[in-house]
Image (cartoon, rainbow, N blue to C red; front, side, top):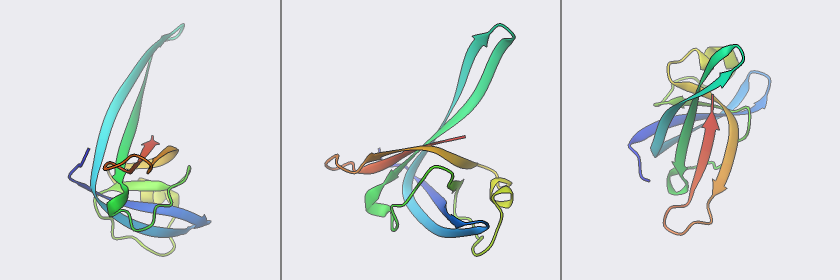
Length: 112
């Protein structure tokens, strides 16, 4: 479960205002989902990020927050569009709290 990725979490507190946090030893996994419809194949990428709670200074991650793979230099006022322009960035669409698991307490974040 211990990964080797550093991530930057931007937790939105107001329009163009974010609280920035950095976490180490994360795991970043990309998965492509494919389904068939009456109009053909539909493809979508989904990213799962596993954040160990021992390395998370501020465990606040919510739907609508932005996570950037690596350490991002931006802080202060910045738009979501500017943050998402970074390569390997996602908008959080779901968070599973797994902090009650002994030895592997973590947050599992899903994004697109």
